[in-house]
Every structure is written in C-alpha cells, then in structure tokens.
Length: 386
Image (cartoon, rainbow, N blue to C red):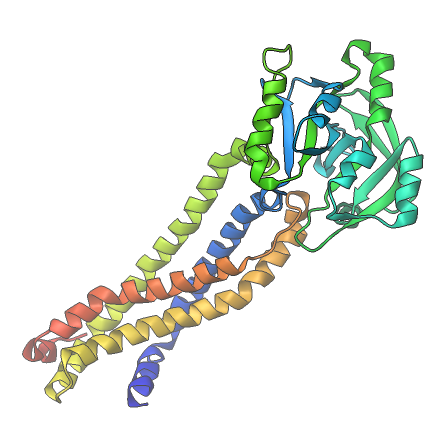
C-alpha cells in the first residue's frame, strides 16, 4: 500500500505534465486503433469468403470475358456442386461519389450458393419474376434510403445507356459480419441488351462462381477446371473466393502497408515523448532517490518506483483510449467511412494491440531513467539540483 501510494503521489505531483502525457498517449493510441481498423476493414470481404466457393475467370485478365457455355462444362466436373454467372456492371447512380457495386447474375443459381444472404419469400419471388428487378443489400439500402418498389435509374459505363431497375427485394445478412453493400440484377436482362447493341459480345460473362462439395479439395477442383480449358481460346484461372477478393486488395496493398506503417510510427513518436517526460521526472528527483537510498531503500526499489509510475501513466492513457476508440471509429464511419467500407468495427485484437502498445511505451520510457536513478551515488544525488 505504501508503494502504491508513493507511485500515485509521484504521478500526480506535476499534474499538468501528467495530464498532457496521458492526453498524448490517448491521441496516439486512438489514432493507432483507427488506422488498424482501416487496414482490417479493407480485408473484411476476403475474411468472410467461403471455403467452398471458387471463382473462375479469364487467365489473361478480368477485362476479358469467358463464353457462357463454359458453365455447363464446369458443372459436369467431379466435385462441382453448382455454377453461377457473375458479371460486373459498373454503372453510376446519381454521381460518382454515390458509387456502389452492381452485378448481373443468374439469380436462382447464384443466390443458392450464398446462404448468408437472406430474402423475404414474397420479395424473392417478386425479384425472380421481374425482368428489370434488382436485389439490394440491407447496408446499401440503409446508406442511400432505398426501399422495395423504388425506381433505380443507372447510367451505364461499360454497357452505355440509361438503365432502369426496380428494387424488388432487400436482402439481409446472416449476421453482422455479412457484407450487404451490393446490388444484383438478372444476367439475362444484360445479355439481351448486349445482343441488340453489341451482338459479338453476347453470351459472355465476367466470372463463374463455382460451388464445390468439399473445401479440402478446392485446389484439386481448381486445377481440373483450368485443365478443362487449357489451350483453348479463353483459358481460365480458378482460385478460391478469398484469393480472388484479395487480388483486388493487392491493387492498393502499398497504400494499406503505408497506413499500417504510419500506425506504428505514431506509437514510436509517443514513446519518444513519454521517454522524455520520464527522463525529466527522474532528473528532477535525483536528490529524492538519493535520500531514499540513504534511508536504506535499495536500487531495485528506486527502479521499481520509476517503472511503476511510467506504467501507471501509460496504463491510464491506454484505458481511456480503449473507451474512446469505438466512439471515434463510429464517428469516422458515419462521416466519411460509409461510402468506402461496408463494415467498420474495432476488432478485439486491435484493443489488445493498444494495451500492449501502452504497456510497452510505459516500460521502455522508464528504462533509461530507472537505470540512471538506480545507479546514482548517494553523494552525487544529494548534490544534484533539479
């Protein structure tokens, strides 16, 4: 009790300095947590990918489509449970800032592979029966206020023209980890348009989504699919859904790495600030530490006293940061994050990193001051003027 009381009194002796140090720690740790959440949110879609789904695309590039008749040949291969068409549309609703993902799919086959998307029975039937029907994810509907029955005009870019859809269904996610920021509509509607305007481009698709029976055979089935179309005019590249999604993340991987690096640089900066604070504190109290030694307290006691004070200050900053980070993250998501991220939640591992960083800053900042104070001679310490 005596030791803890002494640590508390020392930490609060220079109240302004302690408050500013804690504030600096809080700002740094919140910034660290926010940046780490940004990084993890980029990977959210890939982490939620299913191990029983593969994606088959053109081996050269996604820009080049595949013939639709590949679907039946893929379906006939051993280990394949189902095949669906998915085609990127890339239209613009309202303006470029209101962009969201749109896919043309053969709906009955496609959604059978995605049990994480939940439809109301009536809406599902209405969507299937409407040639221009669109299915909107709940997160997307909440973001822009879409409702069932709304007209949805979209300006085509890859497929030029003014397209009009009707929101027939709003699907929910199975749980909070399911991303529902996409719009889906019928591939047949897109293909009919292409047949009229660009006949040579008809009956082609962007990718095939392949459902397999056993996730453990993913690599084997992927090789079988690619072997099926080897030396053809449109060779394929088949990979897991997670690998496919990570390939898009890789396009901005350098930016993500920079963001991650900056988050750790922030911690190093506050470490330097905290170390300077503790060095000033120890230098001012050399005479007191020498007096403690003269009274019979050993060097280890003096070192523990400095270490405990530094860790206590860092721990205070860490605990406040734990409370503040979710609040700041929610504010960031509401103000600017909704147009970029489908989910933006601070993960438990981020809280663990924050506390680990706080304790590391407290321990490392005290290292040099505690060694100096523990080794100071009593006579030299008593002569010192802080």
